[in-house]
Structure formats: C-alpha cells, structure tokens
Length: 292
Image 1: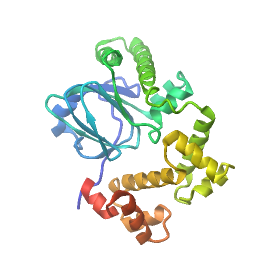
Image 2 (image 1 turned 90 degrees about the vertical axis):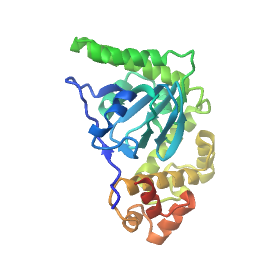
Image 3 (image 1 turned 135 degrees about the vertical axis):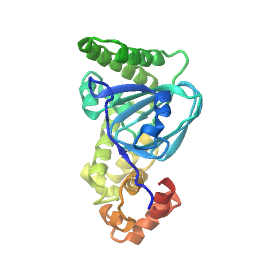
Image 4 (image 1 turned 90 degrees about the horizontal axis):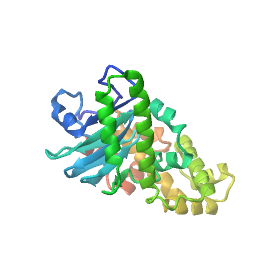
C-alpha cells in the first residue's frame, strides 16, 4: 500500500523557541536522508512557511499546483496546504517557518487588509516575484543572521519580531499590486463571510442559494461579489473548495473514497466519483495513487 501523505509538525531545532525559525534551502536539501519524510514528495504543513529563492531555478508545489521558481521568487504556504519541493543543486534561499500562535501574535501589529492579502489562500496566488529594486531579500538574510548569531536571547526575540513585521509589510507592499481588485472593503468583507460559511457548511450544502440565504442576500448579489473578488461564480468557488478539501483528505489519510463521499456530504459514493472526476479528470482512487 502507498504511504500516506505525511503531516509535518512544527519542530524547532534551536534551544530557544519563539514559534518561528529560519533555515537555508541548501541545509534542508543536504540532510534529506536524516528526515522522517522526503520534502520532494507531497506533504501537508502543520505550520506556515515563506520560501525565498535567491538563486537557481526549479519548481515547488502548493496545493497540487506546480509553480515555476527562479531567482527572487517567493512562495507563501499556509498551514494545512499540501506542499512539495523539487531540489536542484544550484538552488539557494531561505525557509521561514512559523506557527499559528506566532502568527496571531504578530497580526495584532498589522492592518486587516495586509492579513487578507497574504493569508487568504483562496484569493491570491502563493507566488510573488520579488523585483530587483526590492530589499525583501536583505531583511530575510538579516533575520537569518540575527536568529543564529545574536547571543542575547532577550534582544533576539525583540529583533526577530521587528524584522518579521518589516518583512511582512514589505511583502504586503508587493502583493497589493497583484490584488488591486480587492479595494471595495464591503464586497471583500461579504466574500470573506461567504468563504467562512463554505468552510463550516460545505458538507451540508454545495448549493450557492443556501449560502446566499445565510448571508441574507440574493443569489445574483452573491455571484456579483464572487466575480468581482475572485473572478468566478459562487458555485465555482464552492466546487473548487470541495475538490481541494477532497484532495487533501484523500492523500492525507487511509480513508476510502466511499467513506470520504459520505463525510463530504454526498448521498452516494458514485455521485462523489463523478463530481471529483468532472473537475480533476481523475477518479478519487486514481488521484490518490498518483500523488502517493
């Protein structure tokens, strides 16, 4: 039987643990044989991660989509997303790992719009191409040096927190140019309420009318909001969410597709198979074998 997709917990390798750590891509690549899992195989993160590539070219998978990477490419991977690397000899860069608790502490220092742009994976691409004129890489390199070379533990925490806030704000500054359409806060707030309802109720209903009713708006209004924010209909968003959730569950447990069908709210397993194949071109079992 194929090995199930591992869920990788946050684990600090330093004596002090703030809930954040940074390491180089080359150091991870060089100790592949010592790891409990192979980072080049799909795995699910139980923490958040920012990856900055400073040289080389390759690919990285985020939620089953392979992204081309090159010098100054940055990818953000949220907790729960599926991830896989493709290491090449010339690859260099950094991985910043941080827990949800650390993230929540830092979010209090940042405006809500910044949180939305970087942390709503359904809204935006995880990939940012850092322009040469930006100094994001400089601050991440400085974070790495301070994290390992500053011996004063008290000052280290304050410095790391400050640098993290700077890095986060710098990334948001770049991200806003990719998300210019998210300017009407009323529509954004309504979309986020819709998204939260889908997350809580997708096993009960995949019908857009159900969510429009919950929001006390018309189906037409909900569709208009979704098209303005994510350029797809409300029904498309629901279907994409359900399929992604099905993919994550299929490869992250020993659950059979028949059982998963019922857990996802399908009355018959055959309906789930048809639904899944419609959007992926694969049956649930075929998809699981391909990624495992």
